[in-house]
Image (cartoon, rainbow, N blue to C red):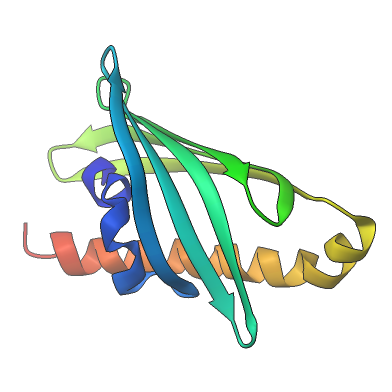
Length: 134
């Protein structure tokens, strides 16, 4: 599951609203790989680019996503993977975000929550497709 979430280049293939993703840079810091990405998210006539830094820590089975630039003031998510067996793991996911203005929060809050629920469902479906026969 770590590999599935870490494979950011494949996000446009299965994530709803993700219209494109470009890797700006890749580097390493000790055991961590750091990837900076531009993700274009679109819904109807609205298209926004979110710039994020993704830190992949394989030894800790942890992925941290830190928002760098775009239409909101703060976005951070965390994926932690807990092995249960050779063929199963528990995925812990947390998300924090804040819009730049009250008006944007009121306008986009419910849509944003719904979009992240759809993202979670898309990752579950993708995992079923990739790992079903393993």
